[in-house]
Length: 150
Image (cartoon, rainbow, N blue to C red; front, side):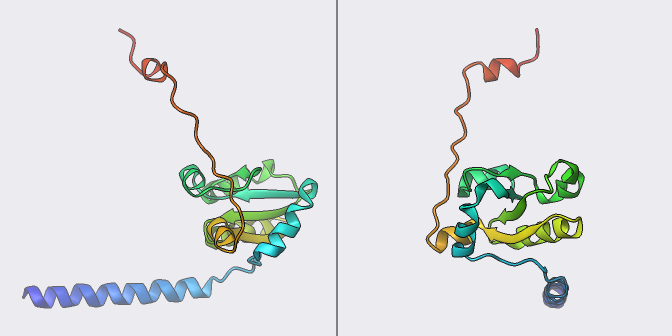
């Protein structure tokens, strides 16, 4: 009986995996994934460019990023559209450009000028240099501020 249940669970997992892969293929992004050279060229026009990094802060801290960017996590992007300037060319950033591509599609759909997307890890693997962001050390008073009043 246990073998039968294990086989059924494995079969169900395989079917769900296939369905997820099929669904993902059906929703291919329309956004251009930029090469390192294309992105570096865009960076030379920094006064006309806006980088929107859609990664979590811990990913940016752990992996690194670019010197100047607007941080908006992908789940919050549609709520924050009013704050994003429409007069700049936008490049979205994620780790390997998957979330960045989804963000670029959202921005394009809402009338923003999007050059494309790039993955920070992909950029670094292609020889690009990321800025490593070191969070400030905790202050001595930080623990005291979080203690309840007695």
